[in-house]
Image 1 (cartoon, rainbow, N blue to C red):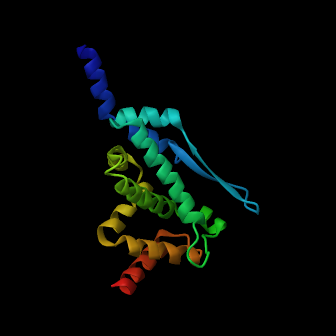
Image 2: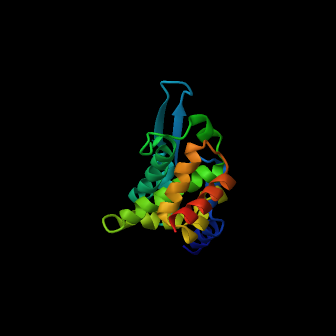
Amino acid sequence: MALVNDLLAEIDSRDPVQKLLLVSQDVLGVYRIIGLFPPMRTEVHLFWAVIALVSGWLGTSVEGLTVVVLAHELAHGYTHIGADIDRVTWDTDAFINAEKGLIEGLAQHYTHLVCQALEFRFPEALAAYQALLPRQPPPYQTQKQWEKVHSKEMIRLALLTTRRRMQTTLAEFMKNLNQAEQDLT
């Protein structure tokens, strides 16, 4: 029994979740854009076996982590093709070519909001988000700096400005975020 405990401690010390998430950007799920010309369509795929494995390593429920992954992938769809009041969406070429820290940071921001909104009905989702976040690569953590300083409405306004202008860099988004702060305060 001591050998098993030692082996489990060794595995935990090497943080297998963090190493797995470094392998590919789409380990737990993926938002896919099919075709660049009309009729373009999008798909969300969840990788159930990996979600089950990672949830065990994180000590979270499979259901909680599934909600996190689904919310994250749907947030990509929201930021990409969710229309503003003027029916403007993010140009697909601009979205595809956008900096990873921008795309993933926005998806993470909206995932966090979904998990917070579900907290009283389904606390496992927020627990899974909080357990997963520190193990994710840097592009999946860019939103942490925005959320500390800027309101949800400022982040939303910066997203709308970024996609309306077909911008693709985190630096452009940060300029838009700082402008949104000035405009809304």
